Image (cartoon, rainbow over all chains, first blue to last red; front, side, top):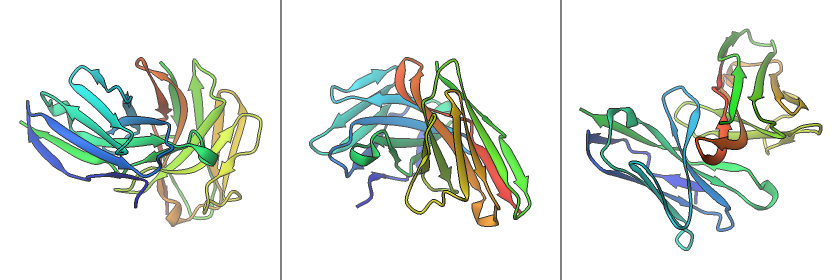
Amino acid sequence: RKEVEQDPGPFNVPEGATVAFNCTYSNSASQSFFWYRQDCRKEPKLLMSVYSSGNEDGRFTAQLNRASQYISLLIRDSKLSDSATYLCVVEGSGAGSYQLTFGKGTKLSVIP
Amino acid sequence: GAVVSQHPSWVICKSGTSVKIECRSLDFQATTMFWYRQFPKQSLMLMATSNEGSKATYEQGVEKDKFLINHASLTLSTLTVTSAHPEDSSFYICSAPGWAGGHYGYTFGSGTRLTVV
């Protein structure tokens, strides 16, 4: 099983749509969780951290289910500028503490 | 928020030469810097972790004599790709933990696209 697994997509959605991305991770001892977005040929940019209580930042909502080792990201009212690859990132524990493990990313295309 | 400045953005070099990539933390001290490599359509893979004032820790399969890392100060970490070969062509990116936009996470440099010909 891959350490961090995401549906690669692509997700092609119209403007204004709501889209949800899922991610699973294999290391139950993982400490922290993040969603990043990466534009083509650019560096990843932090979108938000993910907490067990769930957190919301504008149109973006992230959820963490530790029991199921599952992370989600919900984007409401999609904008053209949301088109990017969304990376699920897990911060490890043990010998590799603070080590980030990246999913391969889910590509989102918002179409007019 | 935390900013990591990475240079150069892109470089083309001849096979057998060495290339140095610099990452500077601006307005914060980066005691730890992570170095990643990303091949097309692949996820970022951690190469090594550098800590200020000590030797870098390399991931399995990464040759420490080929990818030299120096973290001599709290604001500068460098990665030198020695005797580069075409298979070393990739997107190299550094990252340091810090605060950005009200969230704690890892701030990335803008990346260096290395092409070895």
